[in-house]
Image (cartoon, rainbow, N blue to C red; front, side, top):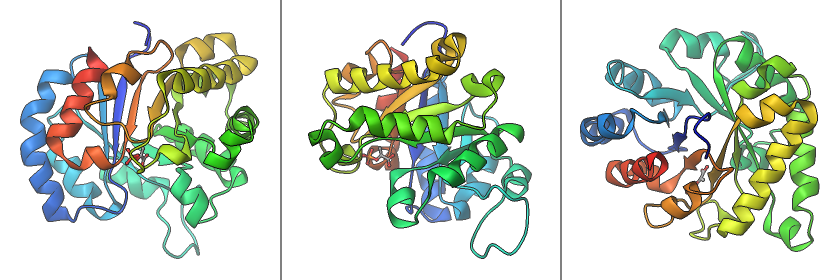
Length: 255
Ligand code: PEP
């Protein structure tokens, strides 16, 4: 991590926590977050149903709230979808886009992401764009090809002037929720490669864009991964459901 890039840790709760459970988490989390958030950005991404609660409870806290998906159209016949104006009205400030679970289970495509990322930016939402390879792709030495395809396609319609406002999360799919993490060498190499891909568009943006690692980050491995030069923070799934564990990861990102 470099001094110019402020670290960021984001909690992806996925389809976990009712509103009551979100309240319970915040009761434990908020007293501790003040101690770590002076030097880093903290984002919590609950399910849609808990967004309002989390926005209201964190209004005075150094915590930003993100959604886990959005539709690029403002309104219309898109049953089950949620639009940017709906998120903005709640006070949401960020959105996870292209998580591998959405790509895998809900057919999220690079074509859709190429519309969603600029739409989020235009609205002032921070897009946290997820990219990463499967285990088969890694074994076939296809990691770089996959990352190139996703980064180039998903950011194709983003103006150069806004590239550095995107947050990219490198999440090797084989490491998500599996307890396996990328080795520091693997994580640094992949994230360095993603930074170079941004550099193909603009050298300044490559230096400024924040790139996170995600995939079984927990308090025991966070310091090593987050201490790597190109890694600017973490996108955290399972461990972010526990206030103490997520705070410990935030503290490691800040160190
Ligand atoms: C994720 O869902 O983005 C993630 C990284 O999950 P986990 O930390 O549980 O591997």
